[in-house]
Image 1 (tube, rainbow, N blue to C red):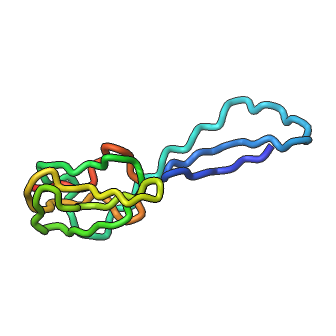
Image 2 (cartoon, rainbow, N blue to C red):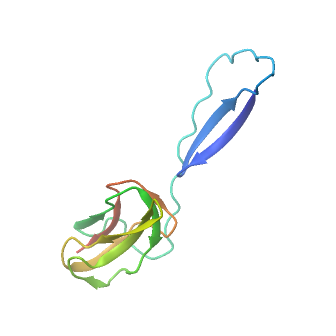
Image 3 (tube, helix red, strand yellow):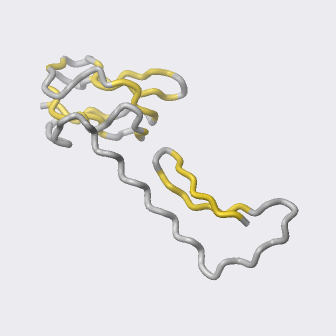
Amino acid sequence: MKNYTITVNGNVYDVTVEEKGAAPAPAPAAPAPIAAPKPAAAPAAPKAAGAGKIQVKAGAAGKVFQIPTSVGQSVQPGDTVVVIEAMKMEIPVVAPEAGTIASIDVQVGDAVEAGAVLATLN
């Protein structure tokens, strides 16, 4: 048996794999605990996380592909705030209403789940 640590979308898992043809190893006394997911790195851009009243949320799970806005920028309803890449498609996440970008809570390359807060507006 071999033990491996695998990271999938930022979540870390400890797994044990049995090799084919090898004699089975005795079962461990207690299962190994699964490592907690590593916290996401803090974005380099200055921001106050969740500073705004209006949340801009991801409509689909994917990876942050592009952030064409910056903190302090004024946006109108429908303006692209963040672009998510999912299944080789670029999906714009737009401002739900007019406002000013108060925070951008992700970085390019971050994995995000559907419904995750990407940015906030005032």
